[in-house]
Each structure stands twice: as C-alpha cells, then as structure tokens.
Length: 380
Ligand code: PLP
Image (cartoon, rainbow, N blue to C red; front, side, top):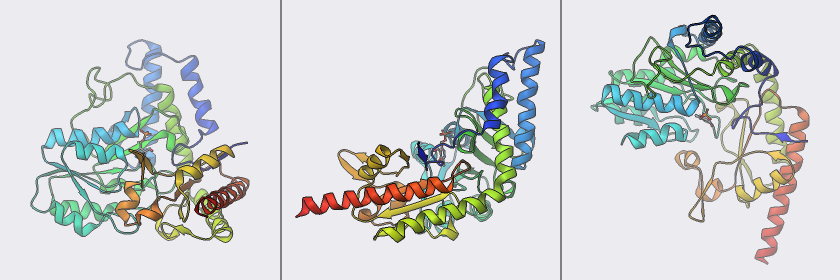
C-alpha cells in the first residue's frame, strides 16, 4: 500500500474527471477543428469546458487558452511577452524552473525574496524603475515551501514602476488552496496545470486576462484563436474542467480538513525527532504543504529509505557534479546551506487520509533514526 505524500508533484486524478474523459477517448474522438457533425460535438465539449474553467477563474471564456502543460503556459507567457513587447523579463528568485530558466534565457532580471519566500516588493520596485520591462512574473503559491504571494501588491508595484509591463502569475500550485477569482483581476496572465488539481497530465491553461496580449509560442494550425496551435486534447480538457470545478467547490472544506492533517504530520515528526525545523510558519503557507529541514541527514538518503517503505515524498535538492546542491528556493530564502541539505517536502491533498499521515510519521521517524545511527557509526 503506497502512502502518497507528493500532491504538489502530481495529484491523483479525481474519479469524476476520469469518467468525464472516457467518452472522448472511446467514442467522440473527432478532431474539434473539423467541419463534420462529430467534430462540432467535440468542439462544443471544448467550448463548454472553457466556459466552466472561466467561471472558476473569474475571467472571460475567450481569455482561456488551453495548452499542453503548466511549463508550456509559463514559457508562452514569458517568451510571448518578450517577443511582443521587447523589454526585459523579471521574476522572483523562487520561481519554478519553467519560469526562472525562461527569464534567464532572455537575459532577464531575478528579484530577491524574504525569509518566507515571498517576493521582496522593495527590490521589485527598485529593479523595475527606469527599465523597459515586458513582463513581471511572480508565482501565486511556491511549489516547494508553499508560500503565498500577494498578487494585488505585485500588480500595484508593477503598474507604478513599469506601467507598460504585463503581470504574470504561475498559479499552478494555487488552485486547491486559493480562490483564483481573487487573483485574476490583478494579473494579465495566469498559468495553470490540470494534473496539480486532480485532472490529467498534459493539459495546461494560460489566461490572457482581457484578451490577447502576447505572441503565440506554437504556431501552425491556428487553434485557440491563433494563440496556441495544435489539435485539442478534447478528453483532457473536458476532464480538467471537471477537476477544476470540484477543487473549487471543495476548497473551503478541504483547507479545514487538510490543514489538521498537515499540522498532525509536522507535530508528529517534531515530537519524535530532534532537529526538525519547519521552513515556514503555518500561517504563511497553503494548507497542503509540510516542508521541514531535518538536521543530520541528507534528503537523497532519506528519500531512498522512504521509497523503500512505499512512502512517496520529495525534496528539491539536485545532485550537481557529485556535490549536493540545495534548492534554489531555500537558498533564496536564506536557509543555511547545511540545513537545506536535509530538506523534506511532504504535500497533502484530496486523497490524503489520517492513515497516510500516521504512516508517514512512522516511516520518516524510523528512516531518520536509521540514517543518524549510520552516520554516528561512521564517525566513531
Ligand atoms: N509551475 C509550478 C509552480 C509547478 O509546481 C509545476 C510543476 O511541478 C510547473 C509549473 C510545471 O507544470 P507541468 O508539470 O504541467 O509542466
């Protein structure tokens, strides 16, 4: 029996979303861009899904562009804005690589964050002032530590110091925890990914709030009103809309339920182990996120033991040229290098149960004890 504590990496699909996609895989397989009746039916399914997505996101249906994933939506926003407007791209230092690497690729500017992983608004203002900026990209919720940015404040700073710039937010990790109707009015562009909220992999969305603002990334067939070419993934889009509506409807109850589980998980680890540091105060992050740094262990070895015990978790350190590199997010937040090497990310969501949490605590505690004993033996 697998204990899945890795919802931020990918959430299990919701049954309703799986059911919704089956007819479009089995029977209604026509290309929505075609002209015959079956094609028109598929097109209608895509358009109805667009309406449903728009109503959850608080935008107009025609402002929703379906893409192939969150990474594509982020790439499209940054590259499309730079191509259209010609100025620099600016982002926060803790962005997902799907934003950070694209900004760096275009020679853009990376802005610092505070100890809670939120963009430093003073630094943002200073970096924007007097520059020709095409896009400012600040994520709604961080994928590693769960911190939340105030997009209204980001929008205000951007409009004052770089009035011509577009504001983009990567909201890929936000859907289950925040009502995006409160975020949409403050941004020009917003990226989403269906597999983070119980939809299928391979479906993303980019909201172009208020109409087309950027150049397309993928051209050819003219789908999505020339904004994103490529045959529609009808089944995936239908399922994504179903999952999004469910996540939206269940959000308030889920936040209450999951935050209790998350608190128990972290409290349970801290009660049984010394040297477990919570990276962020619980008030500063979304309910599904538990991120700790554990003294005296390395994430890689811990994840190996958790995997052996069928507990799925993650860290975000990468092994570069043989030396463990802590995550860019923790480094930007000022977490000391030594501490960051023991990072553990446990993320909860719609399928998480009390039993998952109790098993997670038991297995992590046993694995950390084992690793610490091993290093004590090596040292003696
Ligand atoms: N942005 C954030 C914040 C993410 O967490 C992820 C996925 O991990 C992505 C973008 C990329 O989304 P996708 O996996 O759909 O390409």
